[in-house]
Image (cartoon, rainbow, N blue to C red; front, side, top):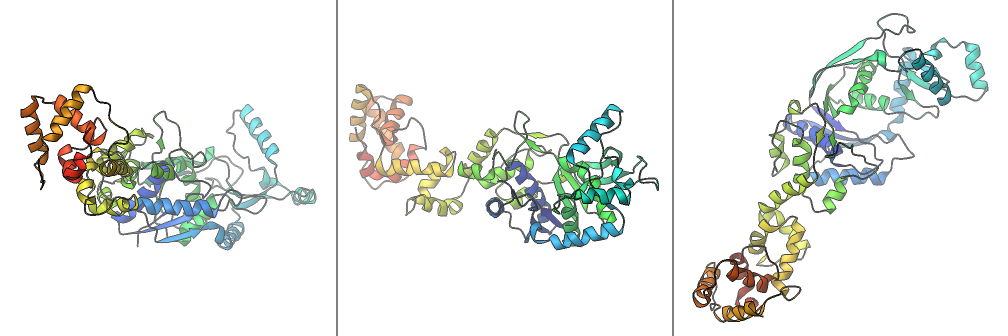
Length: 457
């Protein structure tokens, strides 16, 4: 059997790094098991789901290096869900309910006052044909609930079975159905809630492993019983811990907090996002991986902590710098061309400046400095200006090679007696206008003798 996983967000907003964690867990699991990855959009909420959001999610996944084997939309599969509903009705495990939201709220309050769990009491199962007819004559349309299994043969008895499974991430898990209401699968308007389409699709698409956030643990208990009601073998479930901000706040697609789009626009590299999203909250050290294949070698679902994974967005910049500082020119070349960095000097330029960049786009600033000089005249004392005039008189003749900086500063030191910061800082300010930056020994050959002389104060 081919391992098959799926990532099934609702296209109601842009995915954030927490969503990316789920997508990457599934992708890496499929990669390690030579399996398939299905991108499935839970877009049955027509009022909030948009194709624009679906397209943006696919773009974000591609940017991260995830390329689904198939893309499915639940809104295009309603007939399959309708057929499953008829099977459940025939099996007498899907029943019509006519209560209004206000009536349900009142019943929950009454149960609380009696010390009972605020779950649905299955009153709809005792409705007489006359009561149903009266509701229908009043124009009420039913919503449909799935009858959770009981130990006893009497569905009105509160005693219900516990559901057990061996979780891919958390180990042995148990959900007590006695604390849950029979879930609504179908709304009054005929639209579906999340539970039924998800289970039916997992069956129809041959999903073998469902890896998702641990906020779905209780939901999994319900879904396992639905798999069984549809005479299907449940997949293997795994529930990873959720990502939160450093202060413990959850992430939301609707607010756009730490969205993949915003991180990309902020110049964060995809492997910085992927490395942090996967490794934080696990027993692995958080470090930058060069690609997803390497990251897959450090991925083990069982190594994930059960507690929430708090992370500091500043960690992304630390990882980003590490990636940029070691990025080969072959990987950066096409992106540098788009930024206007090209020609024979592009590769030695990249190797010279990458160690001082936070983002790849920051290279443009140094390319401009090399080509045009400092954007503003450096602030220099009278003594430093006199020193620089003498220093530029000592500039070696061409041809230049990798030792020109050493040769030049040696002559300056001997002629002026200056050394250390007193020697190097004025030269740096004159050449670049910046108090820090790439090694001048690497920049000087790129400037050339003529370009260096042009910076003489």
